[in-house]
Image (cartoon, rainbow over all chains, first blue to last red; front, top):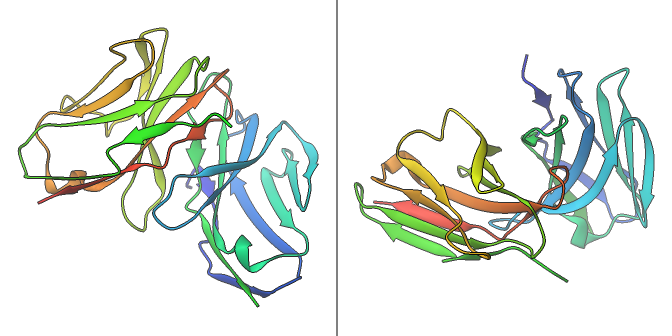
Length: 110
Length: 112
């Protein structure tokens, strides 16, 4: 089983819809959970960072972590065409390297 | 807003040549990383660096690779004898406390 699983998509949704992106993981030592956005041939841009289980909201973005299910989600409300990008989940343990998912390609249709 | 800067943005080199990729991490960050992304694939960890030494490295980071922090601001990745399969985007990242990392825009390395 891969350490971090993420559906590569592509995921196409109409403008204004709520987007749900998800990852599962197998390593119970992961404590820090991140979502990055990556445009083509650019570096990953940190969107959200959460520690342990729970929800965190920042503007139109909400990150959820369920450590009991080893499942994390990113929700994007009122999606815009400029949200079209690849979204990478990432996670790490204490004093450990960050492990990335493969990324989900998201297309927001005008 | 502070950012990680990487140079050059694109490097073309012949197989067998040495390349040095340069990075200026965010000031006051203590942890530094190199990651690699082969076209169409996931972002892969190469090496982490803290307190002037390597703290962790992946199996990809073999004897052909080395990292240095030659002064208080730069952080470099050297590939001694490049191979075709080293062609990828190389990302430098830095972190204040070894949790979330902030990435540069990357150097696209093309080995011909």
